[in-house]
Amino acid sequence: MQEFLLTYKHEMIATAITFGVLIILKFITDKTIRKIGRISDIVEARTLLITKYASILLMLLGFGVISFIWGVNYKDIGLVFSSVFTVIGVALFASWSILSNITAGVILFFSFPFKIGDRIKILDKDIESEEPFLIEDIRAFHVSLRKSNGELLVYPNNLMMQKAVTLIYTYEETAETPDGTEEA
Image 1 (cartoon, rainbow, N blue to C red):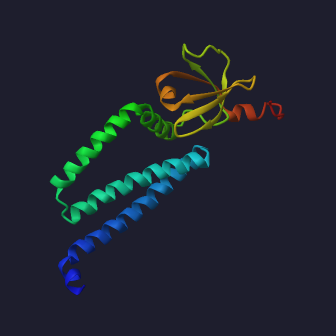
Image 2 (cartoon, rainbow, N blue to C red; image 1 turned 90 degrees about the horizontal axis):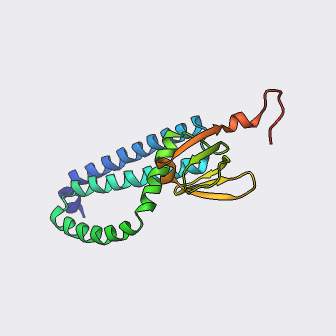
């Protein structure tokens, strides 16, 4: 055991430093994302989802750095990854919209053009309704929109990024009228 520790002393120190840096980066990114969510008045569930995405990205980055530190033969890993990514690529081609919806959800989180409780109109020829929708929820894949008659429309995030969306009025504007009474 002592021989192992002496042989790989530098790699173990570098791995420990990498773990330390990753923990600090995770703490900083979590704090930053939570602060953006709090400042933008974004629902906590969306904030937690984005922090999960950031954690996964940091974990993949850490895996790459640690494999570099330990001198993994990239030719062997390249062969394995190319085979795996070929299979995954075929599967992702079939579900490309899922990946684009997740990406659009992350972009919507950081750009926050609208929030839950806002009323919007989507300028899409496939939606017959001209009346505005109430944003009930914004998830990783879709936005839940409700008409005044109670009809629910689940609209994909990637279409929210592609189509023109008009903000009719925000939640703050609907919460209270100028005379101090609440609107329905």
